[in-house]
Amino acid sequence: MRRALWLLLLCAVTVGIAWALMRLGGTVEVRVGDTFIGLDLPILLVALAVLFLVLHTLLATVRWVRGWPARMRARREARNREKGEAALTRALVALAAGTADTAVLEIRRARTLLGDKPQVLLLTAEAERLSGSEEGAAEAFRALSEREDARFLGLRGLLRQAIQKQDWVIAKQLAREAEAAQPGTAWLREERTLLAQKTQDWREALALAGPQAPRAPLALAAARQERDPVNAAELERQAFQADPAFSPAAIAHALRLKAAGSDRKARSVLEQGWAAAPHPDIAVAYLSNETDPLTRVKMAEQLVHTTRNHPESRLLLARTALAASLTGRARQELEALVADGTADARAYLLLVELEQEEHGDSAVGRAAEAKWLRAATAAPSEPRWRCGHCGKVHAEWVPVCDGCGTPGEVRWQPGPAQILPKA
Ligand SMILES: [Zn+2]
Image (cartoon, rainbow, N blue to C red; front, top):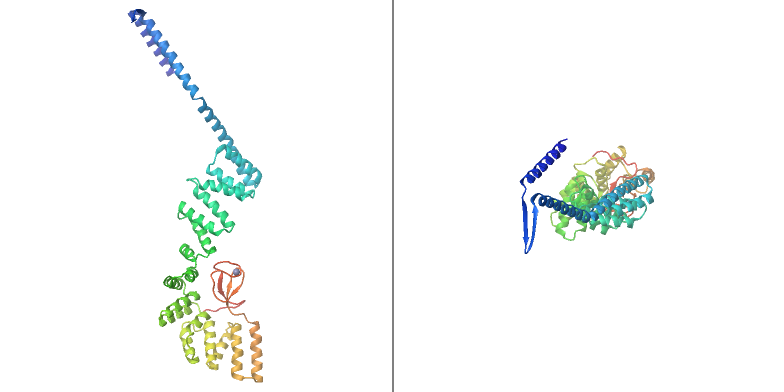
């Protein structure tokens, strides 16, 4: 309505101006050399208006014709986008349904129509993996990793493939690149920890270990790899402080202190280790330099004074007492173990030795020996370093199981059915 009013007003003004010009009259003369043109003013004005309209139309036509290819392109792109998005949806449905061939076909169509967009490349990789083509997936991940905005996505895919192929060297390199692309990712930290363990790079595993991770075994494993004795000593100290109950760390730390001439500190470390978790190897290290049987008994008493009733403490006291021919003392400890049901095969075998020492080759001795030998075969076996994954027994603690290659699973475990009471 308003537009119609404006048009009416414009017409009225135009007619008014034309009428005023008619009333005004007059001519315009143009002289070029000898040629003379004379025109009435209204006719000239009308001619100029017509000329303007013609030129304007001409220019608009030229612009329209020149814009033709771009408009066609835009239309084609819009059509492709529509088709591409439809193919993408079909690919998603096929992926969800697990029909790999359809997914690959549709995602390839979408890729042709939409180009190498991150979501298209990611779905390409998924579809290729579903169809069993790891190389096709790797190609898509590589294309992703070359894009600035989706670099992490591509590297993540390639890293997963490398881990699956157990190509640890490539995987570590990819993990480093991914860390640079997206620092501080929780997922990446876990993967890097796993890679450090797989490649037995214990220093890196220790650096990546979270607050919940067992730091003592990692630090000790790193110390064993360390060539510089100063660094190794520091790592052993860290291992012992992280967990004094981890006996290999306590022993390694103590041996290092002893080698440096600090005998008293070394003994104190072993005593702390024993107090945290009595372990026969600690006793071996503690008594290693002493040969006098009676002094060994005294030293054993000093070592176990905070865990007097622990089965390992009783066993140690019994063994040292027996070696010093203090048979009454040894019997007292061993019978206490039998009485509270914590005697394992070692305790019964010590009782056999004890009977031989006390009774020699007599009928009483032989009867007692036979009794304890029977008990030994029925008793739980002694605790050992055992892999929690495959069950292989190791003579000493190792960071990786020799049998199955699993890291962090070799632990000091009691023999079957053995019950350990509180110290
Ligand atoms: Zn194993």
